Image (cartoon, rainbow, N blue to C red; front, side, top):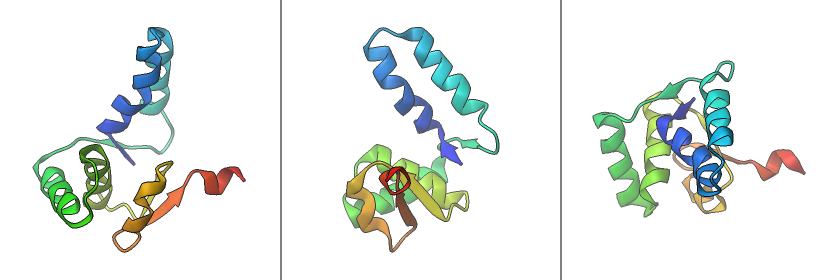
Amino acid sequence: MASIISLMEIGVQPWKLGREEIARKYEALLVNFPNLNIVDIDRDVARRAAQLRAQFSIKPPDALQLAASLIHGGKIFLTNDLRLKHLQSVIEILQLDDFVH
């Protein structure tokens, strides 16, 4: 599962570089990825994100991503952000680097 924020995140660099075709390919890849559900941000997710921000002082996009995962039953959160490791008490945090090395 991923939240709609993932669509925003994967497009930033291609759009910054003026590579619209790449941004659109990334989006198509994400929305058509097998067994991946993209969930919206709703009131419940926003409320849980506020609680996570209050408890862990994390940035709004991170809080929304984590909250969406938690609200929709996620057990593991895969990220490349080392700063989120301290959220292990809430959800299992796996680093992308753990799979590369």
